[in-house]
Structures are given as C-alpha cells and as structure tokens.
Amino acid sequence: MSSINYSEKIPNNVNLSEDRTLQRALEQWQPNYLQWWDDMGPDGSQNFDVYLRTAVSVDPQGWAQFGHVKMPDYRWGIFLNPAEKDRKIHFGDHLGEAAWQDVPGEHRANLRRIIVTQGDTEPASVEQQRHLGLTCPSQYDLRNLFQVNVEEGRHLWAMVYLLHKYFGRDGREEGEALLERRSGNQDNPRILQAFNEQTPDWLSFFMFTYFTDRDGKFQLCALAESSFDPLARTTKFMLTEEAHHMFVGESGVSRVIQRTCQVMNELKTDDPGKLRAAGVIDLPTIQRYLNFHFSVTIDLFGADQSSNAAIFYSTGLKGRFEEGKRSDDHVLKGQHYKVLEVQGGQLVEKDVPMLNALNEVLRDDYIKDSIGGVERWNKVIEKAGIPFRLKVPHKAFHRNIGTLSGVKVSPDGRVVHDHEWNQNVEQWLPTDEDRAFVASLMGRVVDPGKFAHWIAPPMMGINRQPVDFEYVRFN
Ligand SMILES: [Fe+2]
Ligand SMILES: [Fe+2]
Image 1: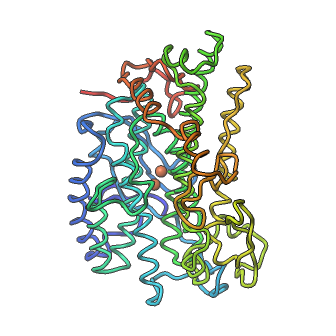
Image 2: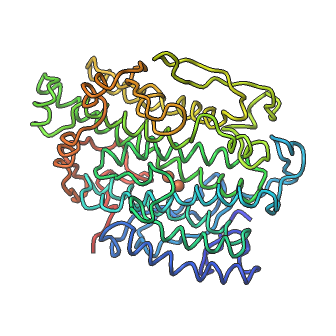
Image 3: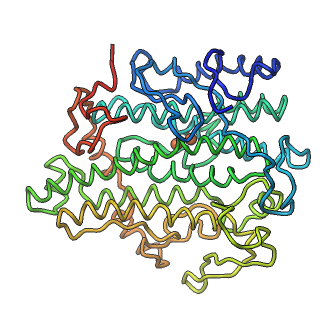
C-alpha cells in the first residue's frame, strides 16, 4: 500500500488502474495540467535538469528519491497515507462513529468548498513565484524554489484526485476551474487574497514560504483530522512535503539576516542607507517585510467569528490543530473563547462561543508556531552582537478580515488614529522604495557554489550534497 506504482501514466498508491472511469478522467485532466505548468510554471525552465526529490513511498522513512529531472517530466501523482484500520471520528456531533470512506450527501457542498479552497492555493503560489528563477541568488536556492513549485503542483493533484473521485461531474468542473483561475488576475483571480499578492523578490519568497506555507501546514493539519477519511489521508502526506517549504523560508530569511549582520559588523554601522549602499538588506526593512507577510497570512484563517467554522467542526469536516492531543470533550458546545474587538478606541477581549471562534483558535495556534522561527532569527542577530530584535506584529495589525478589518492598529497593538497611522505606516510596512531597493539587489547568480552578495550560503547542501553541487543543469 505504501509503495507507489510508477509504471502507470499517473503514479499512484490508490490502485488507480482498478477504477477505469476515474483513471480516464484524470488522464484527461493531466495534459491540461501540463499545459498550465507550461504557461504558468517556472519561467523559462522547461529544459533545466533539476536535482529534485520525488516521492517513492509514503513510509515515514525514506519516501524520497533524489535525482536530476526536467520539471515537466516530474512524476506528479496521487499519494495517500495508508488507511488507519477502523478509524473513528474523534470530534464534533458524530464523535465515535466510523470515519467516512465516501462523502455524505448532506456535507457534499461544504466538503467540496473546503477542498477547492485548499486546492486553489497550490497552483496560485506557483503562479506567484514563476518569475523568481530569473533572479535566483544561487543554484542551491533555485533548486529549492523549483522543489517547492513541483510539490505545490503535486498538492493540486492531491485535491483534484479527491474532486474527481468523490464529486462526480461537479468535481471534474472544479478541477478544470483550478487550472483557469490566475493569481492576481482581475477577472478570474485565485480565491484567497494572500494568493493574489505578488511575490516579486526573494525576500518576499522566503517570507512567503516561512509564513504562508505555514498557514498551509495549519490548514492541512486541521483537514488531516477530518471525518472524511480520504481527505485526512491525503493531507497527511501533503504535510510531509510542506515541512521542506517552511525550511526554505526559515533558512532563507536566516541567511539574509546573517549576511546583513556580517556587513553591519564589518562597517560598524546600523545606518540603513550605508548598509543599502553596501548591498545588503537592512534589518528594519526585513522587519517591514515580516509585518506585511505575517498580517496578510493571518487573514487567511478567516473571520474571528464564523458560523461556517462552527458547522465545519460540528459536522466533522475540519478539526482543530492537533485535535487528537487535546483533552477537552471535542464537541465544544457551551465553551467560550476570547476574540478581540474595539471598544472606546481600545482593543478589548470578548468571550464568544468557541465553536464560532474556531478560525481564531487556529490563527492563535499558528501565531504560537510562527513565533518560534522569528526567535531563531533573533539568535542570529544576537550572536552577531547586534541589539536589534525582530518581532511579529500584534495580531490586530493591518488586518483585512473579520472584526478587526480596517481598524488601524500599530504593530505594538495600540488603536491609532488615521493621522498616526499615516505618519508611521512607512516604518511599519514595506514602502515602494523598500521594494525597489530589494528588487535592485536581485540579480541572477548561477555558478555552482556562488551566492548573491546579500545572502549567506547555507550550512549544508541538499540531501548531503556539497553546497557547490550542480543542483541545476541549464543545458
Ligand atoms: Fe501546498
Ligand atoms: Fe507549500
């Protein structure tokens, strides 16, 4: 069950060949997917041989095989974690009943919406990142970008498999629509706003993979609890791939910081102007990028109070992060949770029914998790003997969804008037000038073992290869 059949047109561990109708439907979708990859995948990369990992089994040990492949020949396929025998629903109104192997009619519309929304983010991020290969800081980084991209493509496959197998004609139509929407397109945008933003430079890319791929982790963890067993098994395997994306982000930002600190110490200055003239990204600019990506990403969890969130939980479609490790009743009726609102010009906490606040619960779990990496970034700064510290902004800062939407709050959590906001916003969020400066550093470095001036090399290469390994052959 755990090994993957690579002899078929679509690699899979779901016995695809036994379901001819499904196999045919997916084989019809496959060329459309490849056409999408050709149109919207990494710019100008079709002929490159890239040192990629490919899943060969879903076993926790050694599921990956590494080797040079042309990205359009990457074996995208359908990989589910093995079924857990007699798995039971472990939260919501159906607690204790057998997990569903098929979609119950009454939950069909909601499940489809959940799967489509998750699926839409996967190709969206590939589209957002498609030009970055042209300005890569090294071969090592280029390879990591492409690894992330092919795996986001596979995550789209994971969701399209569920749509095709369990949602009939509607599912097939959704599968096509996932290839038709475009990140940032006016007429047919991606579903969620953070996936319509641009990822114009590599600092944005690293922030995105640290913060926004981590949103992916939390959404997938919540879906991995689902009563709909195929969704749970699919998302569990996706999570194993997601870990590398967040590593790319965390280590990427860390290397930018390391390089900046090195130059700060060489020049004995913290003056952003001098540091920019020396070709590195000053720490206040990194803080502004962090503020932007953090705030845009926490919006992805949705409104702080949501009747949909309550329905998704009570009906067993979507659990909480680490639902199985929690010791409450897993039904949550009559329980409360604190959300923020503005009263008399101040942020105050208010108790609301927990079921309606489950988006906020997941957002708070996400925030706890994302702070960890920021602390590790601070260790790099501390080690360099520099007094500056990075900080995630208050969760009410720069929000566009829910009660806090449009309320002007400073990064330290004070409600401010328009005047104060306007006076300080250039200290709080990246300015056009910041973005233009960062863009000006982006040149293409592709000689093996060479790195752009603004970023430190990594500690180690990929899969124990040396840092100066030929990760990409350009042909
Ligand atoms: Fe993904
Ligand atoms: Fe990802």
